[in-house]
Length: 231
Image 1 (cartoon, helix red, strand yellow):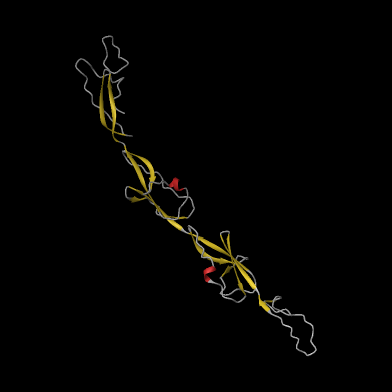
Image 2 (cartoon, rainbow, N blue to C red):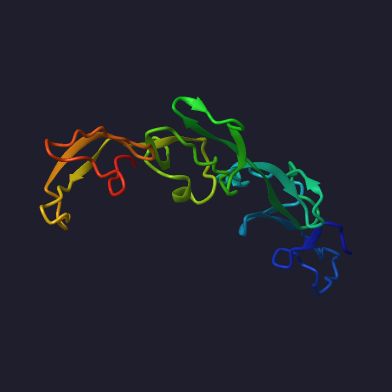
């Protein structure tokens, strides 16, 4: 006869024999407890744990899911319903799949020790990093954003599994040199193609206008129509 969760053990059972006249014939049936399996799916990697129905499931055989940038959110069954790992093997095979919750990390942008408005921002792992607008600063050129490791937001590509802090990088544009070329008219009333002399200055600032005061040498007058004394 069939017995639920058991199967006849054909190797041990004696289900057929010649009946002896003395009535000592014995037939024996052994029922082996059925086995079931639980399949654990962790991002496509499966682990199958098998055991006798009702036996305790070994804790060390159950996967401990982990995934960069995510926290384990529990198991779901084949119908996508939340499920727990049973303490003992069930009467039928089961399949459980790991679910995840993405972790948010902070990204901060700093300009001259001041945090840019709107930051720190919470950014999900693997998402695009929201880069702050390029800042401006008199006498400097903005070179970009870099973190303590010298990496730019673009070099990360997407949000890694850690907080990020970027600082504005500058190049000083003070003390930039410029030249005053002096052209003296000859006795023919003409100017040479090449300057008669040059005067070098080193107080320029990129983007700012500089003017010079020049005193003409004896016998000459500054030709304002042709000269450029600021720029």
